[in-house]
Image (cartoon, rainbow, N blue to C red; front, side):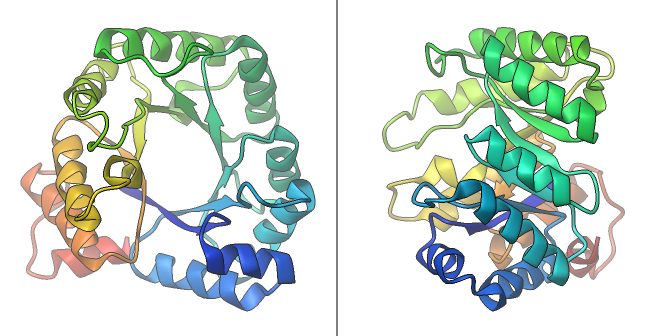
Length: 262
């Protein structure tokens, strides 16, 4: 499973402060730490409180790339900010994200085709997040078909079935796992899958444990990537071990270190 490091996000107080003060050292420290611990993409999000999201995104991309060569996942509901980031990315990036809404799909898939970007596609519509797997899969199929119409290859698509916090939407968990299984059947080749892992534990007491267990369960159901805490050593060890048990990597006694080094 690919880990997309979640930590350069303006919702964290230290990152929000660094963005306001244009303190590149904080951003670059998190970029290096996440890469060293096994992240293969870095999620970049200016956060909801940024007063200049376009300029902030451009700055975040530039200073992050000074510290790491990892591809970036540009995370914002403001598509002008994402496009500003795409323009200064040194290598093809990932767009996070687009729901199954016509105007937003047109905007995002047009950008993706122009910049050769990957796209995280949300299994939701203007009506919100459906509860059952069947409805999630139907939205995934709509997203895949629309992306194809705009010339975005299916290899560049990641479907996010949208996991909700288990303490308020416990019945959604099995539906998300079933969605992951079914997405692998909608096309040949199928799109990849991704989740925002920390969402499942929002508001729970044992957040790290919930994240780790769900990550392994989701991998067993076909999960390809997760936006997650790359600096959680036990999470990374659990993911590396799951890859061994699912016959995705060849066993060696140092398999955890091998996974972190890519």
